[in-house]
Length: 145
Image (cartoon, rainbow, N blue to C red):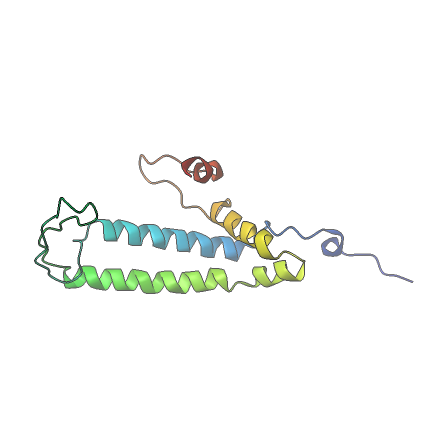
C-alpha cells in the first residue's frame, strides 16, 4: 500500500522559484554594490595623494590625470567597510543551498548560469528606484546590451 504523495513531491522543481532568504540576500548585495558605486563616484581618482601627469596627445591611450589630494580617512574607511560587506553578501548568495538543490535536479552548466542571472532580475531582488530614478525591469538589461 502506497502513501499519498505530498504537495512537494507532486510539484516539479522550478529553479527560478527562489527562496525568500536568497532574494533578500541578492537584494542586499545589489544595494551594497550601488552604495559602493555611488561612494566611489564622488572620490578622487586615487586613494593616495598623487601629482598627476599631463596627457600625451600623440598617444591616444595616455590620458592625463590631474593632481589629487587622495581620499580622506573617513572616505577610505567607508570604502573598505562597503567592500567587506559586499564580499560577505556575495558569499551568502553564491554559497546558498538553492544552487546545490538546482544541481541535484539536473540544472547545471549554461542552465545554472542562466538561473543565477535570473536571480539578479527577480522580483524582490532588485532595489526599488529612489527619487526620480526610473524603475528597472528584466528587459532593461537586454536593451542596454
